[in-house]
Image 1 (cartoon, rainbow, N blue to C red):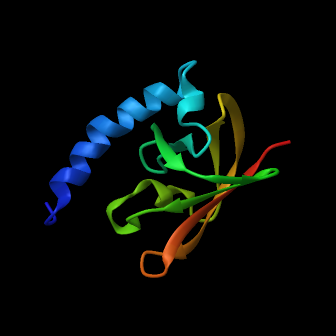
Image 2 (image 1 turned 120 degrees about the vertical axis):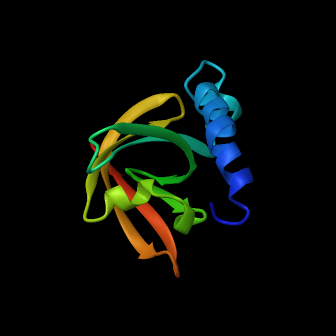
Length: 115
């Protein structure tokens, strides 16, 4: 396990679950102005993974800056474009996501929402 990984792993197991529950509840306005839920399908496993992300929205485009990209795997499933589901402001959207950048220069996920 990498040095300093324990706090990161703890947050992923507990904090992300609590935030996801809140974002999926009627109390979502407390956080949904800056946080969304994204559902990504693993390319090898075929399993869906849902977790909270910070985002910015401009019309039909959602931009997600990936913090600590070297420690996260989910964004790698979106290289070359992949379908995703996003819960924004209490509403569900589908779209196609793609990745810009890399671990060294920073990773940004761009989601184009379906009309």
